[in-house]
Length: 368
Image 1 (tube, one colour):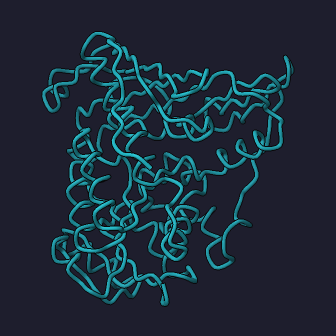
Image 2 (image 1 turned 90 degrees about the vertical axis):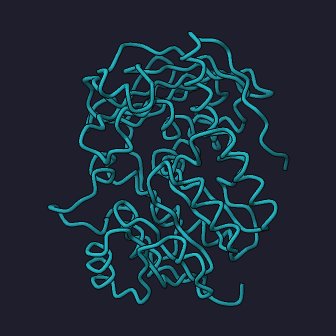
């Protein structure tokens, strides 16, 4: 592109975290924001001096001065908003998950192919400092050959917006699934999932999902490695954790299991605490500071930022990868096919749990 990428952000709860990042990025210009609540829209747009304000997503994407839209709207709207923005000629970044059904995932892949626009799923964990550190440990041979992968995401969602209420645990599984598949370099091929425990009838009524916890075993395409993922959202007593463990023949990296306990590297049979470095040096100087600092003060931090410890410093890495993929005319690291496979794991895992643990083959939703 010959000019800065002109970006709009839709959804200003969690989405507001990205406002100063795009404003500071040397290849981006934040030109518009969109929020359904006018009072919140005006407050945030005034605070960050953003010229264009929309309370209607359909109107936002008709703006010819917008090149790209970063979508942070409710989960049930992701597919519709993504497809309509692509069809309007916009590049799209969308928070997780990609969609809620396999048909929606397929439709997004087809829309990307038809429009030629860029799509990126903004999965935080694969841009976190922990992931980047483990990636380095694999690249330099410290971990050696991967033997097994395990991921978990346990989070109590009571008090979050209504569309979360009773959500099947595996329908929001990408934080646990994505690092395993990304580190393996393979796509998921099939899944077997068991549902465990029960949530209240009131919660179950929303989506028809009775399970407190869902645990899946994933087979990987053209790989001897297996992966395990556990997920809970309601009525399961556990401190918040997003984590992954990589078992290697030389060393195993284990994410801390309680806040502040420290990550562990097992070398042979000798465990030792490891300090995970920050990776701001891999970013343009203008946005490097955002790996350790969000936009909210102590009284107004968004729950996803507070509970996720700032998502491992991932936000500026996400924005940078999205912008640079557009500028360079290349697929982003989490493109439409990668996003579809990662999201499909959770959708198919829940189908498996409802079917008593039947093996479900993941569909191939597109070809490279």
